[in-house]
Image (cartoon, rainbow, N blue to C red; front, top):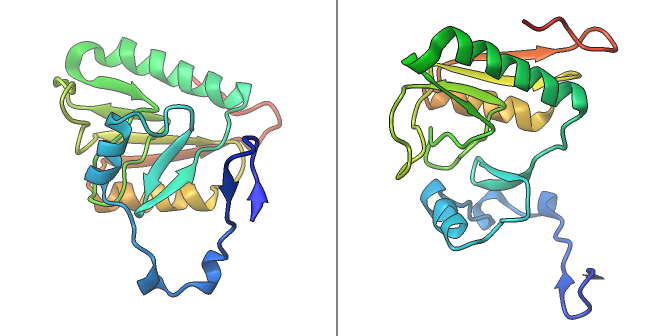
Length: 162
């Protein structure tokens, strides 16, 4: 057990590798969404992947700039024919709600539910894909999340972007 910042709160480090898969109870997307609606996770950068809450990596300036440029490009080219969503949830399978860097979805009203499919999903990576990005790619494919594009920078200052 280790003490957190608040002196009244303790955290137990559970060696998950020592547990049997049958001992774990993953969250379903609907349960996760209910927790989010109740105000849980407001100060955390997480997403639901395979029933687990996974911390999202911080973005570098290069990563954020690529997303901004891609977003501007798609908005200019597609106008109202598609919604360009940046780091917004996709409800593509029952145990996951990934938040891709960019997704092109049908132009509908999403005030009551996240999109359940996307025409295009883009994940930007400066290096090789991390394990969570590989999991997200599988989720997109299983959930008919559209065509998945992953890009990484072979150069120190990033690839050329439109």
